[in-house]
Length: 184
Image (cartoon, rainbow, N blue to C red):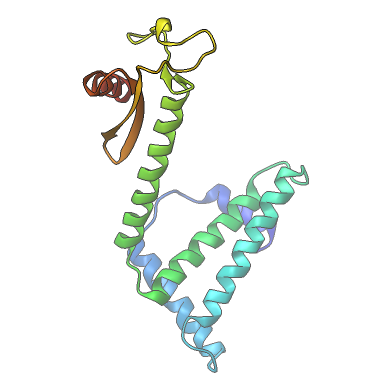
């Protein structure tokens, strides 16, 4: 699509998606492509197109990162093409919107766990808990910053994640993990 035409239409567009209408349009697109390329299986050309759209998004991101564009319109346009292509891919392979949303939720939950782990890791020095909060115990660290021998590493489950805690015993590890999880 012409860049200027996209910008003009984008500025007039409203947010919100009608997934039933999108399904109709995607099915029509799949049928139209199949009619134009009858020698290929239904959806084949849309899958090829999806790969091309992903490449165009990579180019738009690359150009933005290198300062060749000063706005996000190219990234927006190519992102919309990729998302549309993803809906085509789902239609071709019989993946429902609900299953796609569940898969996205799984990935978001995993990322939330990584964020939590990062936040928790930033509160440790060589595995020993170190914070200005309740568990700030500098005496737990030796002068070289290593964990003393009387501390042990405990893996404590929290939601879908495992928190690694250095403590003197399991009970203390659970208290530390609960405090960390509550603060995160």
